[in-house]
Amino acid sequence: MTIYLVDIEAVETRYTAQWKKHLPKQLEKHTGKKVTTVSGGDTPQATTPGAFLNFGGTNVYKSKQLEQIGEMFCSGQIKNGDYFLYTDAWNPTVIQLKYMSKLLGVDIKIGGLWHAGSYDPADFLGRLIGSANWVRNAERSMFECYDNNFFATDFHIKLLYEALYPETLLHKEPKTIQTGWPMEYMDSDLESYKNTTKRNLILFPHRLAPEKQPEIFYDLKEQLPQYEFVVAQERQLTKNEYHNLLGEAKLVFSANLQETLGISWYEGALVDTIPMVPNRLSYKEMVLPEFAYPSDWTQSNTDYQSNKAQVVDKIKDYMDNYDQYLPALQKQTRKLSKEFFSANNLYATINNGNPLP
Image 1 (tube, one colour):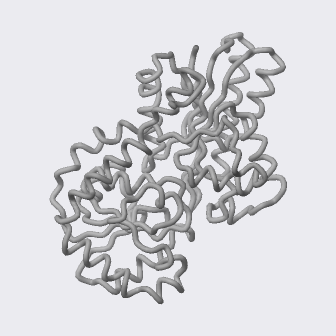
Image 2: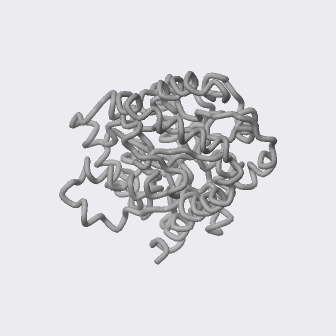
Image 3: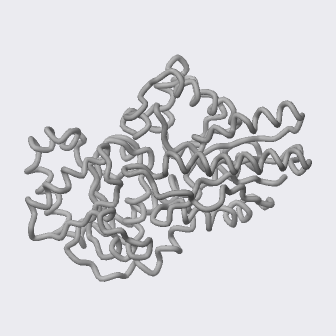
C-alpha cells in the first residue's frame, strides 16, 4: 500500500504549514507505509479576510492536485490497495478520484478529515452560502465518496448529521470515525516555549471573524486595563513570534460561536497558558470544569453585556490565582493530547480498515 496524502495549502501562520512538514513523516512512522504527497504547489494568494484559505486560490491549488492524480492513474502508478487521505475533506476533487478509481477498476480506499462546511451555520460557508441545495448536495456527495470520514469531535459529527442526514442521526454509518487529529508533533514543537516568563497578558488567538466575537474581547480590554490584551491576528506575527507570545500569556480567551476542535487552546495548554472557554460546541466534550464558563454568558454580545461582571470576575480569578490552576491545567493538557490530538484511530483505520475497539 502507498498512502497518497492530498494536502491542504499551507499558510505559514496556521497549523496547515506544520501539517505540510510533519504529516508525511507521522503517517510513515505510525503506519509503516510509503507516503506520497499530492500537493498543489505554492499557495496562490493570501487568505480571504476572516477565512483560513483564499476562496479563489484554493481552487487553483485543488485543480493542480487533481491534474496530478489523473496523470498517476493514466501512468498506472495507482495500484489496488492504495489509500488516499485528504487532509481537508471539503475537496470536490474526491468526486473525480472516485470516478477514476471505479471506471478504471482500481480498488483504492479514500479517507478525509472534516474541518467545517455549510452544515455549520456559524462557519463562513454557512454564513455566506447557507443551506442552498447545491452546497448541501455537494457535501453529501463528498461524504459518500469517502470510505472513512474522520472527525476530531463527536460534536462535529452530530453537527454534520443534523444538517445532511437528520433521519440517520442516531444510526451513524460505520465509515464515520471520531479520531484525534494527527498532531503528536506539537508537544516537541512547543517544548522551547514552555518555560517562558509569564506576564499579565491575555491573548485572543482566533480569526477576526463574526463567529469568533472579537468585539467581546475588545470590550474586556476596556474593563480590565490592569492586564495586557492582544489580538494575535492584528500583530501579523510569524509562527515563532506567535508561540513566543503564547508562552508569555497567562490566559487564552474564547467566546467562539463556531468551533469543531480548537487547536489554539491546546497550543496554549502545552505552554502553561490557561484556557477560558465557553461550555458549548466542541469545547463541551473536551474541557475540564475548571476552565469552562457558562455558555449563556457569551452566546451573543447582548448576553455578554448582561453577564459582563461574571466574565470579568472569572478573568480576574484566573490571572490573580494563575499558579493555583497549573495542576488542573496539566491534567487538561494530558486529556487533550490523548483524546483529541493523537490520531491512533486514523492510523488503525488506514492499516486495518477499522478504528481501535
